[in-house]
Length: 193
Image (cartoon, rainbow, N blue to C red; front, side):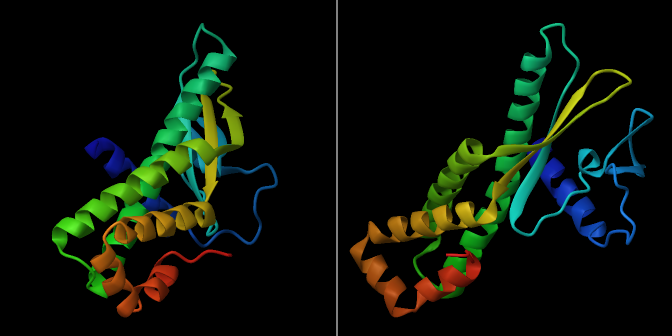
């Protein structure tokens, strides 16, 4: 678990540091600063991918005698797991910030809501994640996949989970509405809808 969190934080830091791109992008998507075992690789393979509208993560599978289909599924599972951790960290932080900033509920309630929201978002991430790019290392046959999921979809799910959690307790729901927390929820989880 700590390894996954560490990996997600490192990928986020690398993404943040490389946010400003070149004015002359490489038409093939290969950059000398992204190499894998001596091979020029697409920037996304090294975690150098950023999209404000989507979460993205990379998965990898070593070359296997079981064939391409097995390798692709293994890389896809790895990418989805990385994506779920990344999205869950962000949504957990946003949910905690929302609950604390609105002053709704006690610490136990906040933890329960955060846990419920995180589980819902992880399910959506694993279900709705789609393959966006593929690269096979010509040196050794390892497979890399870029997987994405729309932030709007996850944010909408998070908002509904928060509303549902607070709605299960009538007094808490009334308190949330009285404090204008629904507007704060929309600010914390902005969606195009």
